Amino acid sequence: MKLLDGKALSIQIKEEIKAEVEAIKASGGKVPHLAAVLVGEDPASQSYVRSKVRSCETCGFESTLIRRPSDISESELLEIVHGLNRDHAIDGFIVQLPLPGHIDESKINLAIDHRKDVDGFHPVNVGRMAQGLDSYLPATPFGILQMIKRNEIETSGKRCVVLGRSNIVGTPISILLSRKAYPGNCTVTLTHSRTADIKAELLRADIIIAAIGIPHFVKGSMVKEGAVVIDVGINRVDDSSRPRGYRLVGDVDFDEVAPKCSYITPVPGGVGPMTVTSLLMNTLRAARNEVYPD
Ligand code: NAD
Image 1 (cartoon, rainbow, N blue to C red):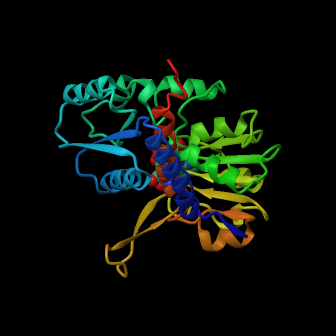
Image 2 (cartoon, rainbow, N blue to C red):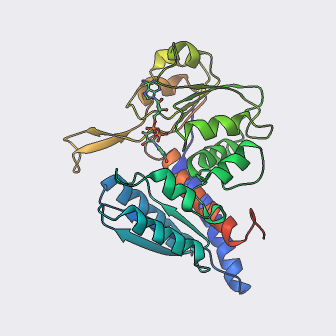
């Protein structure tokens, strides 16, 4: 069994990005600038945004954090988005999800200029991804592809079972792994809450991507020998022995599943750090106008 160490890989990729930013600076080019909009006080969102801003600093990016209280109106938030769309100093920006219930997330998403949509959630980027055109890939699936690629894991002809059909993880990774490319060329089955027999589907999988948000859902008895298991889940479970009173666990029962795998990601330290790094990769591409040159 080989551990897919997302923390170590993300440090390596950030070093590569930092070297590229230094080269940009040395040649007098524009330093990448990422903006993040954080609404409300959700602890997980605050921690994700903090980590994104810290990573920008590590890589030499400029970053702007815009914080607003949870009672901000939808029209005020839309105004912020329009302002960021117009601001030539900003290469890319994200609006951290989830948003408070009175704000329509899809309305905000649609208002973001797709050329600055470094989260890759805008329908233009999703559509381009689905057609195999260059686009900003959603950060978590992009991070998963990087892990597969950098560890030279074979995907062609493999059976891949994705657990969960969210717009940010399950659905896009199922599209990406079925594309005619590397990583890709998999035969993908997308499973979800209405799938009749998830265990039977999982037992056929050479590659499992688990993204459902249920702690330790995938047990040893659901995984075949030699499978590659990518655990996207980040779930807080009570743990009075920890100073914070909780610990993070994945959607996979690591202790049971790891001995059967050829490769497995840990939680924490697997997909999570790669997600942040992918956002930086998208922002670097935005600063270079690579995806949308005009
Ligand atoms: P979500 O919470 O939006 O949706 C869950 C999906 O799981 C749905 O498609 C649903 O159909 C499916 N599902 C729910 N119960 C099921 C069941 N019993 N059997 C089969 N399918 C079931 O999904 P999400 O936003 O992709 O998040 C999934 C997990 O991944 C969460 O733990 C989240 O915190 C984590 N996550 C991690 C990262 C990262 O960077 N590592 C990024 C995004 C999400």
